[in-house]
Amino acid sequence: MSLLEVSGITKRFGGITANRDISFDVEAGELVGIIGPNGSGKSTLFEVISGFYRPDTGAVSLDGARLTGLPPDHVCRLGVARTFQKLRPFSGLSVVDNVMVGALTRMHDVRHARARARELLDRVGLAEKSDEYARTLSTGQRKRLELARALATEPRVLLLDEVTGGVDQRSIPGLVQLVRDLHRGGLTLLVVEHNMRVITAVAQRIVALYLGEKIADGPPNAVTRDSRVVEAYLGQAYVQ
Amino acid sequence: MKGTWPAVAFFAIAALWPVVVRDPFLLDSLVLILLWGSTAAAWNVAGGYAGQVSLGHAAFFGLGAYSAALLGTKWGLSPWIGLLVGAVLATGFGILLGFLSNRLRGPYFALATIAFSQVLLIVASRWRGFTSGSEGIPVPFRPGFWTLGITDKRIWVAIVLVLAIGLYLVELYLERSRRGFQLAAVREDEDAALSLGVPALWLKVAAIAASAALTAVAGALWAQYVGFVDPLYVFSVDLSVRFALAAILGGIGTALGPFLGAALILLLETYLRARFGGIGAGLVGIYLIIYGTALVLMMRFAPQGIVPWVGERFRRRPAAGSAS
Image: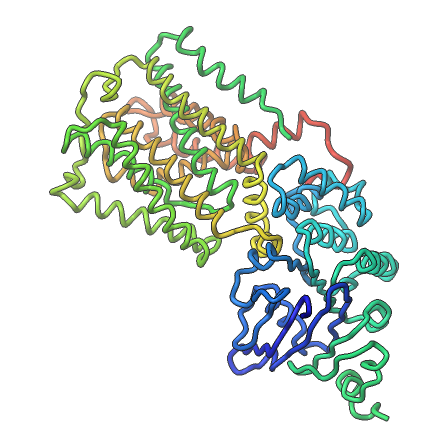
């Protein structure tokens, strides 16, 4: 059995079908990328897996336990954490308290949770910002904060939404390295990413979506050469 | 973590006040400061810490006041029992309102709370057979502690001081505990909190229910202290605004703020009314204009409230760029 199983997910908004019958699995320890042009349904799929949207049909399960229909906080406690594409730090709290909120999901003692938060901030390279307000961080730093916060909930699967989106070019290699390190440490990751160079470099497998449907699923070099993927991104003229 | 010594000093002064001061007017002022401070602190639990701004908290205050007064006049029960009944009723309505807050956010929630307090006002002022309608209820004076028939204002200071310190401790809990941090996360960004496993709905409902129950307790004590319950006053939007105003002036989401805000409002109001109000004044009602102007000025120069304003001046500032 795969760690995360997505089977037959369909999600409609009125007359628009954002996800149509999408199925794929993520094995334990795998790093899977989700790609697709704007509007292909990546974000919707993310919201479905993390419990923020309820699919019309289909199911998501973690290690055999059904997640579909559970509220997002419950999904997180079962072991699926996520970051947001549009970053959502707790602006009025300090950086360390932001991360501590995640840690408090797993531990009851505030001091232990704060110590754990500091460890994680050290790991994502934000240690010296620990006591600043979260609103003072740059976009790249906020991405790191979201990562640390999600990691603090001790996820079995981490969903990352656009790690490099909106970040200046110089910050990208550091963030990519961070994701690599997390994967090397044994974490299972599902990563939505616009930046093709980034995703093909880090992912073991890529799922490509187009207009709400899965059009390819396989190793990066195979998916990026797939004629349907090329057509979806570049148009018919580029298909050889 | 903010120090607690200013609060210790505040409550110590309040405790020693009756020992030194015998003047009934000054003792009365202290009772009212602690009582209104408690209502503001109770409001702060929902409005400040949970971020659920209510403009209908008078509903819970009135529930407490009516429970104590009605159980006393109709069945001769102790106001302490009335206080308990009021708190239970307020908890029930608070839970209801809490679930509503999940659907209605921000200003819509505030509007719903106003509507709620207005419904109770109509019930209390029209249900003549039970509540005596808009005439209100005089609370019978039955001497003794069990019946809260107490003339000695020093004992009243002790009673409301216990309530005030209790509320301060509740707020301290919300600043330091696991649940408190989770609630702060919900206030800052509910979806982000949910994504981190924080049971947001449950926490909001609990905070609003606790806030409601504590407000009812203050209402029950107030009814016994003042001796008369008028529906047009206890369920008024004015009163709801007063709770919120004291918390906002003192510093929303701070533990001591509501008490300082309540003290400031009471002192300002009393002074202005004595100085500019009354029949002898040249311009009737001018004190209200001055009062309003003073509030506007305070919000202009210390928009975050007294506690954060003072805090910024006495604490060492963090690194540049982080003070905003």
